[in-house]
Image (cartoon, rainbow, N blue to C red; front, side, top):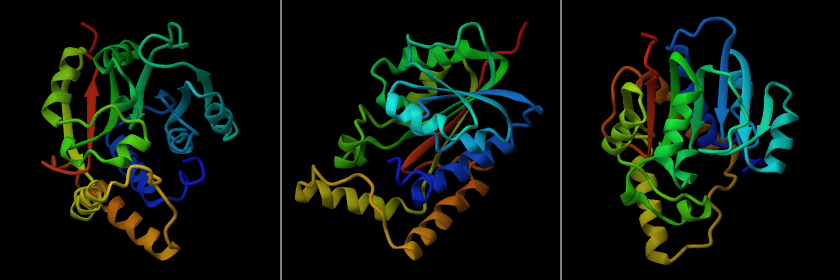
Length: 237
């Protein structure tokens, strides 16, 4: 994953969508940002464009790789109970494909809500469509894939106001669905979840996937491989 994170079409496409989403939030200069479950830090250079960044990650090796990027304060921690951020509160929290790894996911969302300033935002991505469950999820240690309606309810229950949800990775959904179905039929439970492809094919897929950044914050897509949620903490009364 560390070797693929900067160049693989899927990570590049997701970053483009996250970038397009944050651009529309109107963050003030010098915003305080936290990434929860930063992994090896592939999102950190992007997030550092918008302000000062803190990041939390449970894996020690991943923290070392993320810290070497030199653009965020990296702390050891995990959701929902081991958060080393003290009383600091943030304008933006980012979680990209993290929640599906957390057992108590509802409690995790409530914990994230507590980290935000009044009116602060959460940008969240998760895998969608439980029918797509496959060896890909097993290799990545996913515990679940989400339905948009269920995720919306969870966000509201955690105290967020009127979350916006949309699917994404729609254009490539047919090809991905066929590949996942074929993998289940052939019993491919040990295949690597992501591999290198040719440079040309990788570039093509990255551009196709990234193109959805122009759509997802304007039109909520009803179906796709993943879900993007943008939720706001209640404003101070």
